[in-house]
Length: 312
Ligand SMILES: [Zn+2]
Picture 1 (cartoon, rainbow, N blue to C red):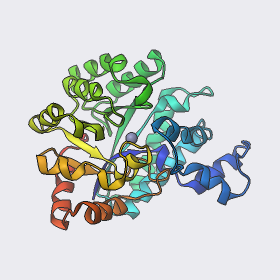
Picture 2 (picture 1 turned 45 degrees about the horizontal axis):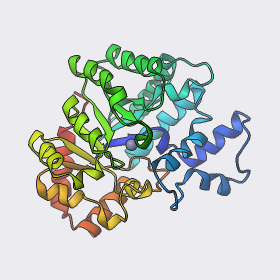
Picture 3 (picture 1 turned 120 degrees about the vertical axis):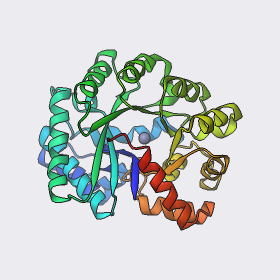
Picture 4 (picture 1 turned 90 degrees about the vertical axis):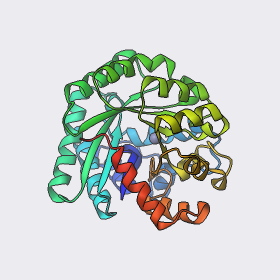
């Protein structure tokens, strides 16, 4: 199995998050673990992406320390290995852990150290790391993230992404970063079309994204569908997440089957398994039950996803 769209922080085990709050003496938003855990799960009544992203306020609070970053990166490799993933791309935004004095380079080193330790214990899995530029972050912070991606090109840091609240920020203000990435042959994906903003999909494809995060709204724009198909751009589908953020009105209305039948490459992902209480196995089971994908189709999808990996 392969997973290409997975956020490190959105995959942190609730128990780990709880322990980090306690270890660091942070005020717990709920004393009992059972209550605390619920704060990390997306409210099924959340009205939009912006509301869902508020959960990251809780998640990122204890991630301002290097030992915590090391730990979650290490644990994530073990968790992926336990699910029999052969290849996974873990993405994260180093700038989100720089609120209390850490530098992005320090954050990066800590995460890579944690991943490295995990890989030593789990030699069967391959891991690529994508760095997320953030919508709503300062120009300087995003520039720094891009600089790190440039500097570490050729290592397991193998690509870029743009994450954050697409409903508020769009893509155009960040396009210049991806011009630089393209010129330097750093592959990238972009969270686009997770909300109904077709202009972000159009621009992402113009910029040279080889994959698109979510892209659910594309189903309403035939010219964009055609472009994605003709350019062979892969859509990273995240069924549970797309419903959780209200990108689609119901799970049954997810466009994955229509994309696939039209000839657009698609793959299955969890996005944030903790927030959405899902796993790659669960996403696959849903694809089978709701959209009648056969085991053979899912196996081909997995192979194709591996071909779209950024780690080379
Ligand atoms: Zn995502």
